[in-house]
Image (cartoon, rainbow, N blue to C red):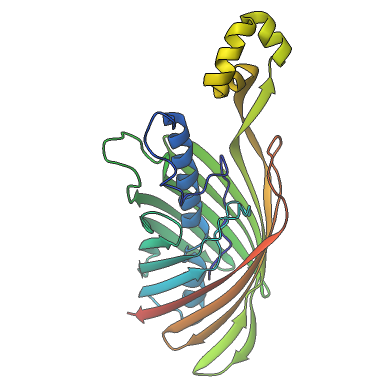
Length: 329
C-alpha cells in the first residue's frame, strides 16, 4: 500500500535546516527559491507515490465488489527519498487520509503529511478528485491533486512553492496474477515537471480464509522524468582574472568578498535533462480482515543519475506500513 517515494532534488539542501536559512544579507532570494523548489517537488512526488490509495482501492473493489465505500487510513515510512535518491536527511514521516469512492467510479480524497525534519512538521494537505474505471482486465484511472502547503517562511515574503498541482493518469492490464501498468504525472505551478512510471506488479495469496486473508504483492517499477540540472563552468583562471582587474583589486576582493571571486571565475547555467531516474523493487505483505487492511512493505531503490547530474547512486531502502479501515455502502 505504501509505494516507493520517488524524488529529485534541485540542490541537496536539508528541508529541516530553516534556522540556517536566516533572512539576512547572507542568504539570497535565489537560494530560498531553490529551497522551496526542493521542498515542493519532494512533497508533490510524495503525493503521487507514497500515499496514493488507488492500489488499495482497486484491490478492495475487485475483491469485494463494493458499490461504494468510505476509507480511513494511516501510513508510515521510515525514510523519505527523492526519485530514489537518499540525501542523508534521515527523516521519517506519517500520512493520514480520508477517501470516498462512488459506485459510478468517481472518488475524492484528502490526506496530510507529517515529516520528522520539517519545520513545521505538519507540512501539507492534499485534496484529490479522480475517476477509476474497470473494463474486463483493464483498469483506467485519472485524478487531479492540489497541494496546500503549510508556510515555512515569514508571511512577508512573496515566495510560493513552485509545484502545487498534479495531473495523473494510469492504465493497468491484469493477466493471471500479474498487472502491467503505466503511470504518468504532470506536476505544475510556477514550474513544471514530468514523471513516467512503468510498473510490473503481482498479487499472490499466502493464506485465504472466509474471514481473513494474507497476500504478498511484489512490484518493480522504473521512474523516468525530467529535472533542471545546474552546471558550473570555469571562465577564467586566477591568473587571467588578476591580469584583467589588477592585483590590487583582486587582493581587495580576496580579503573582503571571496565569494564574488568565485562568481566571476565560475559561470553557472541550467539545463533540463530527461531520462531514467530510478529502479525500485517493493515487497508488501497485506493482511485483510473484514473492513480492516494492514500492510507492511520493504522498498529497495537503485537511483540513476540524469545526464549531467552529480548524485550519489548507491542503493538505499526503507520500510513502510499502513492501516486502512473501510466502511461499505
